[in-house]
Structure formats: C-alpha cells, structure tokens
Image (cartoon, rainbow, N blue to C red):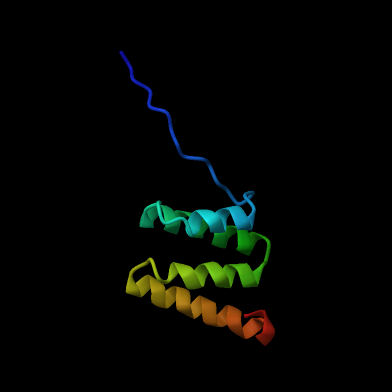
Length: 90
C-alpha cells in the first residue's frame, strides 16, 4: 500500500509577481533554505526583466542568509548595481 502525503508547497517561478515572492520571503514561518530559494527566484526574475532595483533589494536581503564568502560575492554584485542606479532609487 502506498501512502501519498499532500504537498503543501506551491510552485513559484519567475512568473510569480514580486509582491507575492516578497511576502513568502518575509514570512517568519518558513525555513532559511526556503527563504534563500524564494530569493533566488526573485533575483532570477529581476535579472530576466532587467529590473536592477528589485535585484538589488533581493541580493541585499540574501546576504543576511548565506555564508560569508557568498555574501561577499553578492555584496560585490550589489555595489555594481548601486553604481548604475540613480541615487534616488535606493
């Protein structure tokens, strides 16, 4: 006999609106790994849409959840983005 457990996971992709992804990221009840997964989707969506402000926002938050060496790499990318954005965007 096979038991099938219902999955309480909703598939999110780059087609998911930013505000829904951001709500998932800011949800306190999900794990750190899930937050990183949602942030990766958010960053990928922003890169596809060439939305530097949203990419910066997600990268900035992701640095709080990853190891130091990855955070340094992400910070370098955030600095590159910040240089191309207008000052009033951030």
